[in-house]
Length: 472
Ligand code: SF4
Image (cartoon, rainbow, N blue to C red; front, top):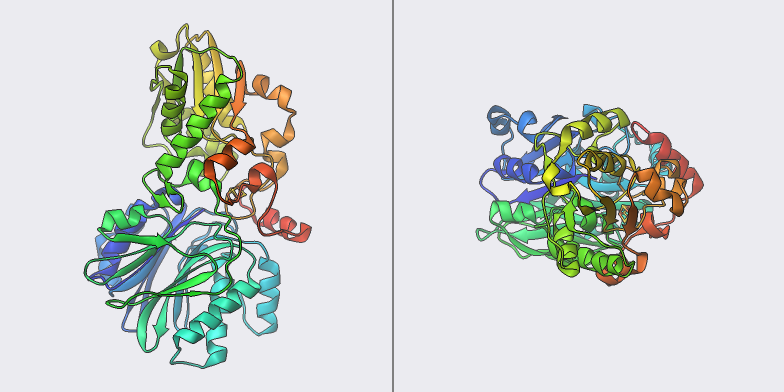
């Protein structure tokens, strides 16, 4: 999972990108980068670390131009080195690009590019996308590219690149600096675009970037299509290869900020609906409880909805150390374990002598839920019931979330009747698959829950993805 932003037609792109990347920091904390464009010349700066540490005022002042692209990285492939950080650029023709997603046929693409005499130099999967895009442009003509050439280049990307990808690029089109955004034919990874009152355009992973900069959200980036944006002109949208929409439901459950807007509405509203449905399903089990406690921060909305449905008090029972990282997003097991110990502290009065429902967003490896239960038990509750507003994760994700092999997934590893004792709780209730489907409506990707992959992944591709994962 990563965050991307592209912007054009602003006074100082680096300042706007710096704010945008801070808004997108939750989507990746491993590395970040920025490229601005000044009269055809690229200025690039990228490094490992958080946005506020990588970009000083001095660095930002050297990133001149009124257009640019930024990226925050959450590594799913590669070795996590600075060279794999985005954005990437080509010289022939001049294109700069960043993306969020995961390409599943990386090896095939690298082989194909090699046969064309083009070497991929990083482990970052936006590089082959960029090289295919740039080569398709050059095949048309060496310079002076037109909108039609860009459509041809994106069509070539859709033809060759498999997996999930939402991309932004800047290049010269019809003799003008142009922001180009495209999203894979299933629209698995999110992306939206917006405009400013002064004629600027923006495309980003989440709409919170537009809120922060005072831009107006126009819409989700259309799937299987390219959006071409230039200052003080209307955006041009060309539909190329739209397929069945399969947006990632895990974005709604966990990754996206609740104040972001996605196709079906505000993420906060979606989480509320999931919590409400979970409350209804929990009530049908005939269990009894005294209080509903969220696992901060993501689960608050769903826990409130669940408490409302069950007519129970909602209480904050865990205090989160706001200066520790998100455990799920940390790249290795040892770091995740240490971070978790620092992360939460229970308030004894909320738990003591009570039958508590702990609400969490998801269970992936099962280590977090076990530690939460252990923490809760320190406070002598009468019972601890775990309620999760997503179904059990039984299958790996190949589209950009770091849960690569089945053997890491506790719900795939253990039979259902062993879950409660393995987690150290009195009962565990997951939102049902049909509950999630009905809550979301429409078609979605929920392959990590039901194993139905929008883009089939061959066993060779699976092996290559697993081998490429960091720390797993
Ligand atoms: S498999 Fe799961 S995490 Fe991956 S894109 Fe689909 S819903 Fe999202």
